[in-house]
Amino acid sequence: MTSHRYIPNGEQITQEMLRELGISSINELFSDIPKNLRYQGNLPIEDALSEWDMLRHANELGQKNENLSENVCFLGGGVYDHFRPLIIDHIIGRSEFYTSYTPYQPEIAQGTLQMIFEYQSLICQLTGMDTSNASMYDVSNATAEAVLLAINNTRKASRVLVSEAINPEYMAVIKTYLHFRGIEVVTLPVVDGRTDLSQLDDEVDPQTACVVLQNPNYYGTLEDVKQFGAQTEGKVFSVLITDPISLGVLEKPGNYGIDIVVGDGQSLGNGMNLGGPYLGYMAVSRKHIRRIPGRVAGMTRDSRGERAFVLTLQAREQHIRRYKATSNICSNQSLNALVASIYLNVMGPEGLKEVCRQAYSKATYLRQGLLETGLFNETRGNSYFKEFTLQYKGDAKELLEALKAENILGGIELEDNEILIAVTEKRTKEELDRYLEVVRRFQ
Image (cartoon, rainbow, N blue to C red):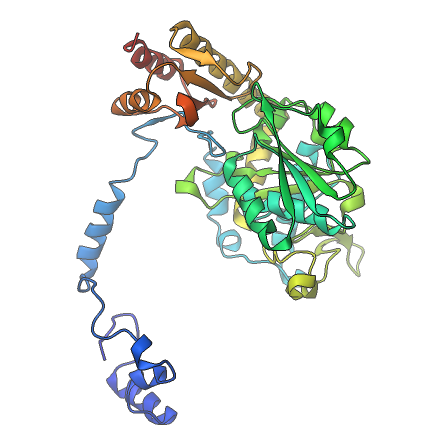
């Protein structure tokens, strides 16, 4: 048997365990597996490295990653380079936060439960909804769970309507969730960057479980949420995917009669983190409070009449009822939710408005500058927040490579030489001018 530095069982202990099991070798543990299915010989992997060599090798691999200290980021599509106040890492570094788990025993988890309750309260304030859960895994998961909530509460549901302008990753997860349920996913067309809602009344029938819209949508264009709410309220479940930062200035979805609001809390103080972990948020109107998936923390009074926090509205057992459960989401992203709570408390309403103001004004500066070069066309309308899509008249890949050579991550290449460009409050005028300078070389 090969000796492993961090496995304490030496040869003597291993032999004692084998004798207790009544076998002579570890290979006999796999005797139930037919020999022709077992791997023969040694795996084609390199020999183990010493600890120092391993650390050096890991460092070499890490240096191949792109990082934001060396690159100016205009990437978006759901993950954004927003400012993270330093106090976030100071607070979440406390052991009682980063080692916590879903608090089933409220008598020893009041701090964690209070944190979750405050997170839920902040999400409700931000969205204008009545109830939020303790968080979902990410926005794709939250969106799919919102669709399932609608399906499970619509008699004879057989179809859902989804805007073509939602993030393609969210669409893929929705389709994966519904594949074996026999639910048809019908897409709503996009005209000039916006979802065409003119045919929505005709598309909705008694078998339609919900309609899904994203605002701002994947292309950065602002949708008509007021019209969306008016056309769906009282007729079919409405699911709205929102960028939480945008709610610093946009109308709260709850004021438009939306049933379910979901989104990604990545921009609320969570870093880009090489793609994760993030958190998905979900908030619902009061009539759906007992249908919401995941955990819900509530405030009550203990036997002494003092304020106390508990998990409420749902029994733990319902989450393990497999296909009969409201949802199979049995946990949440507590640490990421804490980050979002800290961010929202530190920024406050005025701070969030300032983030929005700067992002919009800087996006407008860059967008106008790009159009003035004569090298871009408007293809997705001119209503946007911090992200916009323009069509480059040349080879978009070539342009993005030229920007990358100047340490500028210029955006996401879409089809037909369209480029999706995100501008956050972190971008400086010098960085925006550098972007334009590179583009002008192609005039």
